[in-house]
Length: 372
Image (cartoon, rainbow, N blue to C red; front, side, top):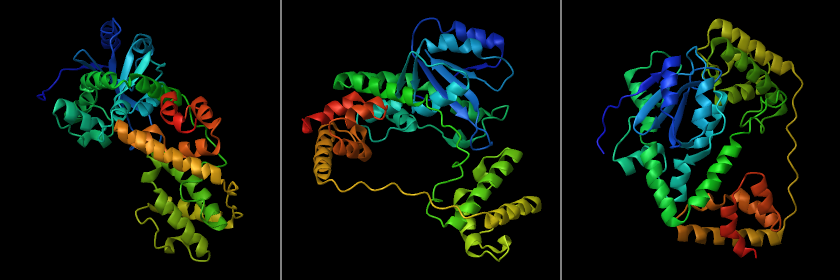
């Protein structure tokens, strides 16, 4: 396939939105993607929505001051073709989108067909013979106007989804795996409904903090709150104020050297402005004076269950054999955590996993014979 410049419609006026909605008559699939600004701002927002169908390409601007309410009812009538659907579904919900009629996730389809390279760029290269330019992947999508390179990148992100989905769909049918894909996509859609609730008591417990001393954890808590305020004030993602590794190193050093001024730490962030450094010092000193925070108690390890261990090994061997026969990565059928749950509770775990949306029926069908 020859790469060529494509025409697109920039949807940022009611008139352009009307034209887009008019083009949606019928029930054909829509290829969708989103661009967000999490690498550049404190609060992530949807900055661009790309839609392609029937060789028509639309860039919808949710940042412009016009309502998108009329966009969603006609759009949700269609099957949405997405790549790695979970993130985009969450972003589209933020922009006001309801659930679509169905989802076709090209990444899941590729995994269920046993493709080892299942990124969007890899699929475009394999099925369309093109290498995509990903230079704009980390661009600030909240800026206007978008550069020509960013526009080209945005259009390409949906331009090839439809033909790829058509190829993958045929291969799923040939292998009898269409139902697997439908169940897997439904599980992703259901998972995207879950919204993580804020937990003021524990949000500060970043990865790696649980093993620190109680004194260090008290400093981590103060540093986390300091970082949130600083990031929000300057509208930057928190890692650009102080990344987690440095935050933990600073907390450890300051807890182990309680009489030395914080700026004496070898890991002190040298590029902080004097006012920010002052606020950082105050946060550390508050942490030093605060009561130590005990480590969270570890859950009791269940007693050793030799029968479960035997079942686990049988399940693993069976899963790996089935995966090899089907040409799949074994974890596509069941990750280790799922096997462990089933080994511990062979009579009920599989059905609990399905009910909790952690697993699909087709996956259980492949494994259940070993336990019957």
